[in-house]
Amino acid sequence: MLRATLLVTSVIGLAACGNSGAGVDELDSDDDGFSNSVDACPNEPETVNGVFDTDGCPDTPQGFYDVVRLDVEAWWTVLLTGQPFPYRPISEFVAYTTPVDTPCGVVESNSASYCTTSEGIYYDSKFLQFFLDEVGDLAPAFIIAHEIGHHVSNIFGFEAPSVISVKELELQADCFGGAWVASAGARGVLQPAAQGETLDALILAGDPAATWFRPDLHGTSDDRLTAFIVGTLQGTPSCTSPDFFALFTPPSE
Image (cartoon, rainbow, N blue to C red; front, side, top):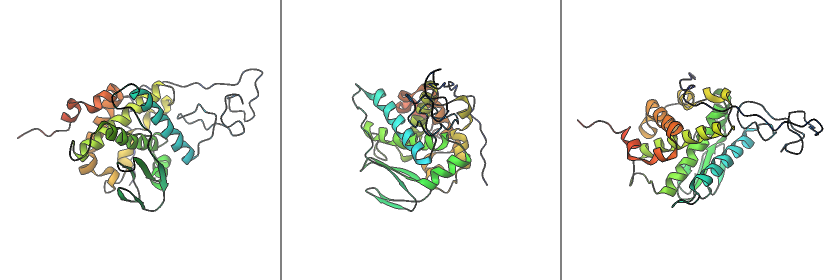
């Protein structure tokens, strides 16, 4: 049974975003408030839904996923410019509807996955569509940010299980995803209406038997929510610190 309670709506104060509305004498062919000179889709009206309402284009699932991917990668590129480990783009971003073979093995249905060998991301389009429909735009956006977070962990040299555990690697990706969500809000990419579409809703809507939600691999719902909140409030440096991993270390007996 689908449950989508929204528990962290007050965690992120996302800034409202205004559009680049048409001037008095500027042509706006699709009458969406964006003049043709700044509208990426001048003949198709913007879908106003609180997420990525700044390009003047309607939302299609694949188009939306591509926009999210580009935004997350551009954000990481800026963050890591001049750092010891500069960002490099993922090699491929592949949608599938049946299990697909990758250099890291077969990726199952109802999942999204990052492959360290190919440095590519593979996602079941039905999996993202379900959360797009049932939870909202931010759910698949977070899944994409989480998978790109794995790419960043790979760039940084956090390998599982040789450096950190699989669960720690997954929680680090949740933390990186939370940092991107906060940044997207601060940059005006997300509107306040999107605050409720949170990781909590995503987890509660997910099937615990599915790999992407298995507590033994990804952490409990409380673990994942904690990692997400750390990222939103403290940013990406907190996601790599020993203090972060200590949050999920069971007390010694």
